[in-house]
Image (cartoon, rainbow, N blue to C red; front, side, top):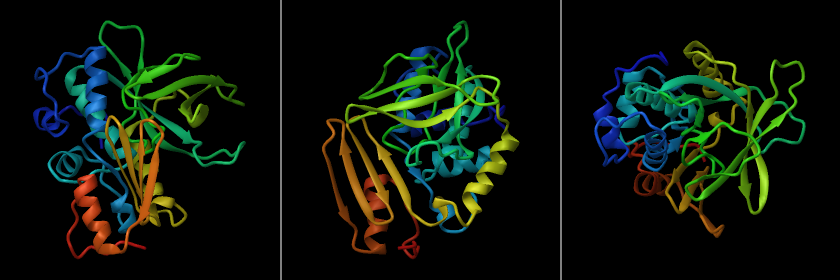
Amino acid sequence: MDLDRTDLDIDAYLTRIGWSGDRPPEPTVETLRAVHLAHVTSIPFENLQPLLGSAPSLALPDLEAKLVRGRRGGYCYEHNTLLAAALRALGFGITGLAARVRVGAEPGTVRPRTHMLLLVGIPGEPQRYIADVGFGSIGGLLEAVPLITDTELRDGTRRHRYVREPHSGGLEDLWVFQALQDGVWEDQYAFTREPFDATDYEVINWHVATNPRSPFQHTLRAQRTTLDRHLQLSARTLSETHSDGTRKERELAGNDEVLRVLAADFGIELPSDTELPA
C-alpha cells in the first residue's frame, strides 16, 4: 500500500464510477465534488472479506481488481485508498487522516482511530476539503466539503457540518463531523489533522479485519447509496431509507436470498456456494 502511488488505470476508474465528463478532468473543486459523488453512488460498501476470514489487501493493483474491475465493494480503507490514488492521478494533493467513530457510541466513550478519511488540496486554492467515500453510513458524505466550522454544508441531499471540540492533551481541538438526522445534529466521527501514512492504515486495517471483537468479523454489512435513497443490509435485515426520511425494512429468508439481494440490489457478486454467517 502506498498513498503516493498514481499508477491507477484512471480511465477504468472513471468508467467504473460512470464519469461522463472530460477525461481526464481538471483538478478543480467541481471535479472533486463530482468524482466523490460518482464514486459513492457507484461502488458499494461491504465487509465481506473480514466476515469470511481475511484482511482485505490495500495494494493498489488488488483494489483496482476488486473495486474497479470486479463486481465488489469494500470498506473505508479500500474505498479511500482507491479514491486517494484517483485524486492524485488527477492532480489533487492528498493527506490521509484517521477518525474515532462516534455513531452508536455512548456519550463520553473514546473509541480508537479506526476510520480513514482524506484531506484534499486543490491546486491554486487555499481552502482544503474533506473527502470520505468509505464511511458506510447514511450520515456519510455524498460530496467532498470544505473543512470549515459552524456552517451547514449541503452535499447532494444530505446536510453536514463541522464543529470544534476541546481535545485534552492534543495539539489542536478536534474536528467533529456531524450529520443532520431527523432535525438533530448527530456526531458521526471526530479527528485531528495529524497525517497518517500507508503503514498506519495497514495496521488499523489488520486490526479491524482480524480482531475477534471487531463488528466487521461477525455481522454482514453492505450499503448502497443513490441520490435519493440509502440501502443497507445488516446481517439479514434489509432497510431502505429515502431522502425524505421514509424508511422500510424486511428480513431476508436465508443465505440464498442474501446472495441474490447482494447481486441484484448492491452490485456485489459472490460465488453461489458462499456461506455467510447468519
